[in-house]
Length: 502
Image (cartoon, rainbow, N blue to C red):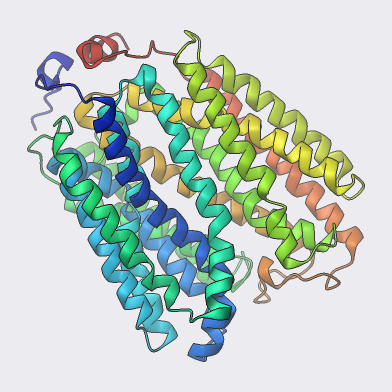
């Protein structure tokens, strides 16, 4: 079969008029709104779940409302990146917004819980690629040397969604109607569509007339969904050693092996082998997967710590996450700005991760004894250190590939970050739920309330969770140190030179 390798010179984009600062700002506002749609939808639904279950008359199957969106959005993330490299960023982003809005309408009018689950799946099909596409579009507009400062805006979107989502979800469910949670996506989606439809026409064009590997797409989608189902059900709906979980894990493994075979045999694989073989992409993706995966696990289980160990209310426990969220954005801001000035830009996240590891080690030892205010301050320092890695990992990955591979590389990196998050949440769940004897009993972290389990037991279990967090950050640091530090390109003209020198 023909395995031609495209040289950087052959794939260099055609010259295009550079974007002005006003062009970049107008495009950035539009894609940030599109990102906000996807990020908000992951946080706004959680606080309205009890109300939705009561009104639709089915509380037992409520977790499927979250799981269906997670399955769809994670599975399609690499597909969006590939499609953007084939057909262009604009048409793929606009299509994602439209699918997301159609799914939102279906969610708002769903008369039963299972129809809501199906609608959420459709919504996930649209929202799954918006974040990766936004990062790709930033990479199209701005050279890597200046790109770190724009990654800060992306981190700010996540902070806004994390802060506003739970509050809005609770207020809307209590004062209005739960369906309003989905109706508000329509004006936001329409605004995002209007703001990006015309401005994205000014983007540089890097797409290539390639084919989409449909078999590879089907294999990776099936492998992802079966793995996420196993991670979602293991320890909650079924014991980890049960036959259903074993079957899902075995099926996922077979599908992953089939996908690996397809990558080696397809003329145009879904994820090109030269991207997977790129050491910067590989190490940067693994480092970010460990770092972001551990961060996601903390955001899921820290509210349980605040309620069961610190004695906070459910509402106050959400506020306890503020240091984690704000610190991450501050760390990303510092690191992103430092990338524009430093030659050895990797030193900033290396130092940041060392601080995060030391901070989590202190929290591990003093869990349950440290007063709340010092605990939150130290948590903010940990998240500040972790945040320094986020723009460096993303920009380094994008800097190491050719312009027409930006979408595929960015989508692949985001995909494995989400998989990493699911794995870490499953590990933390196994520690906490397994430790209290709840594994397989139909319980989850949401059902743990103050007084249900004695405080001493929860302190011991969270020492294990925090120790696992130290290990996750240490793995992120290890792979970050193994990531080659390529010079950041300062313009499109030296793109081929930078990649050729890898």
